[in-house]
Amino acid sequence: MNHTIDTLVSQFERGSLTRRQLVQALLVIAASPALAQERPVGAFRPTGIDHVQITVTDLKATQQFYEKLFGVTTTSPNPTQLSLGLGSSGNTISVHSESGPIKPIDHFGIAVEDFSTEAALATVKRVVPGMKAEKNGTSVFVTGPDGVRVQIVPARK
Image 1 (cartoon, rainbow, N blue to C red):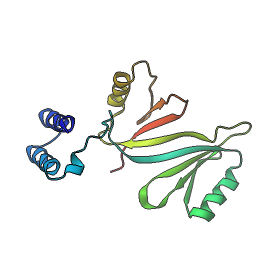
Image 2 (cartoon, helix red, strand yellow):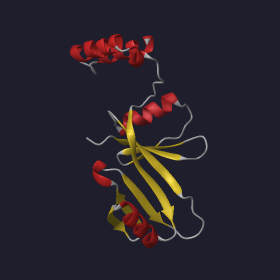
Image 3 (tube, helix red, strand yellow):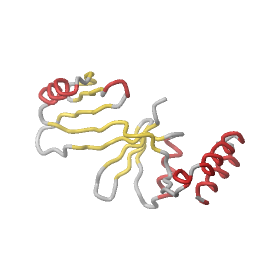
């Protein structure tokens, strides 16, 4: 619990929290023992999975499968790519077509709060020294220990 309180006070001192927000958070912690339990604190605050990018050999069959089974909305940015919308959440499955051997899951995107590409690059380098972080437009790519690529993206508003 001390780490949580220290984090809140630091956010208040940096101006990220108002006095009212700090007091409300401290009251919630004091009133609820379950909420006061420690949990790991990461460098980023994720809001959820933003998207998954898969690679397929048959774009049309993949489109039909997801449309029939899940009723996805489909947009096609180019002849080798589809974007399959999942309901009203804004989450997507990005589908790319390639011939030959494929790696089915190319990467997945994690949406995070208070995101900026420059801050994300600096955070990755600070938290995981030596890790390569690659800027890609308004996102940052990193690669996990087993080669799984993760795209860090801004949370949807």
